[in-house]
Image 1 (cartoon, rainbow, N blue to C red):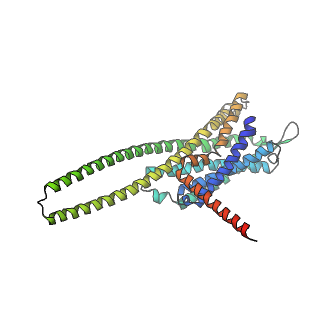
Image 2 (image 1 turned 120 degrees about the horizontal axis):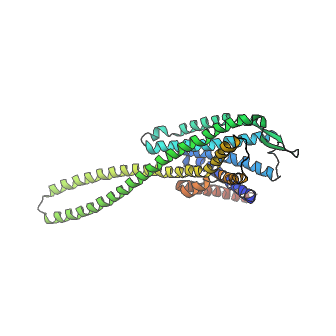
Image 3 (image 1 turned 60 degrees about the vertical axis):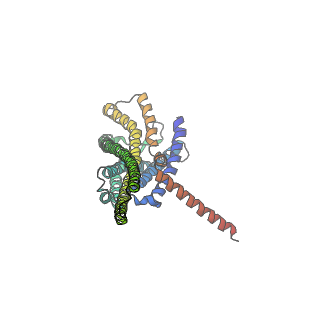
Length: 364
C-alpha cells in the first residue's frame, strides 16, 4: 500500500516528464536524421500514453478524479493502456531488428535503415495495435459489487473468450517478442565484443607502426648524413617520391579513420539500444512469468491463486510500470549525443525565454 501511494505517483511524474523531453529531443534536434530516433520517439509517446492512463486509475483509486469506474471511461482507459503496452513491446522489437541489421549487415544499413522506412513500420505497428486491442470495448465494463457500487472489470459473459485472447496475447506480446529480442541481443552483443577486440588490435597495430616509422625516419636521416655523395637530383627525386607516398598514405588513413569512426558511432548507438531492450526484458519478465503461471495453473482450472502469489504479482506490476518511465534516465546516462542535444536544447530555450522577458520588461 505504501508503494502504491508513493512509488506509483513518483514514476508517473518522472515518466511523463522524461518521455515528453525524450520525444522533443529525438524529433527537434539533429538526432531526427537517424531512423532509430523515430522508433524511440514513438516509444516515448506510447509510454507517455500508458502513464497517463495509469495516472487516471491512480486518481480514481485515491478518490480525487473518479473516472475509471464509470461507463465509457472504463473501456477507454483499458483500451488505450492495452494499445500503448503492445506498442511499447513491438517498437522495441522493431528497433532491435534495425540494430541487428545495422550490426550484422553494415553495408546494407544505409539502404535498409532509412527514416522513411522507419516511419512506415511505425504506422503499420500502430494500426495493428489499434485494431487488435479493440475487443476491450466489448469484454470490459462496469460490474456490480456486493455493496452495490460499480467496478471496471471483465464481464463474466466473456470469460471464455478472454481465456482464448489471453493465450494469443501471451504468445504475441510476450513469448514471440521475448525470443526475438533475446536472440538478436545475443548476436548483437557478440558482434560488439568482436568489434571491440578488432578495435583494440587495430590500436595496438597503429602504435607498433608509429614506433617503427619513427625508427625508420631516424635511420634514414643517419644514412643521408653518411652517404652525402649522392647527387642533388637523386635526392630531389627520392624526396618527391616519398612525399607523394606519404600523402597517399595519409589520405588513405584519413578515409579509413572516418569509416572507422562512423562504424564506432553506430556501435555506440547499438550499445544504448541494446541496454534499453535488455532492461525492458528484465522489468517485464517477472510480471509475465507470474501471469502465465496464474493462467495455466489456476485460471484454466477456475481456482483462486494463493495470497502470496497475488502479492508477488503486485510487486512485479510495479516493475512493469517502471519500464514505462525509465527510458529517459537510460538515454541520459548512456547516450552522450542525447545528453549534448538535451543540454543544447535547454540552453537555447533558456536564452529565448530570457530575451522574451527582457523585451517584455523593456516595453512600455
